[in-house]
Length: 372
Length: 193
Image 1 (cartoon, rainbow over the protein chains, first blue to last red):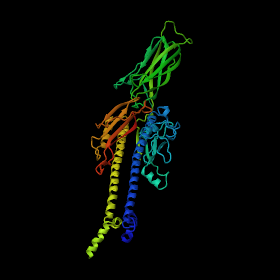
Image 2 (image 1 turned 45 degrees about the vertical axis):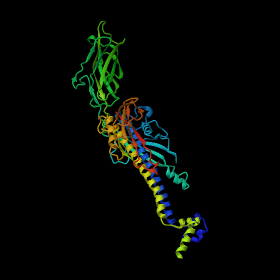
Image 3 (image 1 turned 135 degrees about the horizontal axis):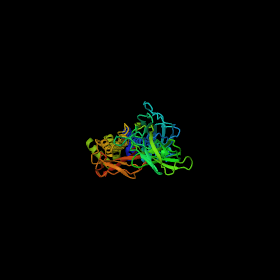
Image 4 (image 1 turned 180 degrees about the vertical axis):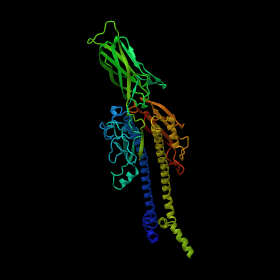
């Protein structure tokens, strides 16, 4: 109304007149409000978009960390073990229970290593400061699923499921500015996002029965042929040995680093059946391929012609075949009946058998149940 | 008489700056249009910037997803039953490529995918595959698994050159377009051989 009061306009400056002019004020206020609101919305959208990308990164890191831990579980299950293969990175409880951890306080495990590789070093969360944290736990059942939980049947087996949570305080730009303008300098410096992953083992968890194969009766060689092993007799004061051809086990594939039990038997006697005294060391070795990787010695005291029976165990590294070697070395003793001078003696390996553990759970594999 | 007096009045107004100013201040005709136009310029600029950023965020999330899916496939693929071999790195690379293919705004010449895996106790990538041949193809940095005697590590890296879809210049001179940036994401996952 005062806008067109020309009398007053002639006596005031332009700016004063403009100030007095009220026409169009409503539009200006509205446009300013729209501008402010648009800035707030777009600024918030920018910050939320950044947070969403960080959320994807956190999800990815959580899945990588979870599956890394689950591979340790798989390895332990395949070897009926209660520990990861490298002790320094062991996180499995020895009593078969559940356990949880935070990478900010203990990072020597596969989960923390892979979370770090994927961008989350987990220094611990600090309020309103860009930071992140990785937490994990073992569980006996997968979270948020209706599947029937798997149970590993060997003693003190670890819980077969794992969950990992990656939490990050993501720095925000515009929302922080708005918060400062509204007098909240310590608010909205960051926005918290989290990635989760539930994973674990899946597949058949039945434990096979141990199987014993007598190799004195015969073996199936690498070509699938049946090949008998005859008893070996040594007629010297040295040694004699018998070795099997590569043996394909019944629990194929044999879990790597399985401990197999070997039983060897034989007799030691002098020529004509005289009893002898002394001892026989039967060395039992086995391997899973080209290298004999384990030797165990059975020390059997010999008196008379009693059968020699010894048990040994060795570890095989191959996954599908075992080769066995039994060597007997006789050391004559001074006590006991002595057979006539000039007579020879014999050590006879009648046979050996190998028992392959039935704890193989080779149908297990790692899977992710939920990622969000 | 009336006409002459009007001319005289107009003449006096022309020489009176205060009066001129007052006239502009009082004349509300077209004011709303000018104000709306000025605000609209800023709003359109903001909308364009928002659209460009949304595009960058979309591609960034997609690249993260592609490298993640390919890495999961490399580490767990074909493991439904025991004893099956893990897929070759070239197959993992193809997974990443399939994820990226078809994205609007990403031609085949401005993105790359690279998959690599290590051997047991390896100190470098033993197998690698690049399935998008452009200048952005380079292998992800090698990192050994902490239990490398028993496990191996594989990685998939997807990179892309991001060109914002809306280009504009202020007064035809000052470019307000986001510059072209190379965005790459590597994902590392463990596999049990």
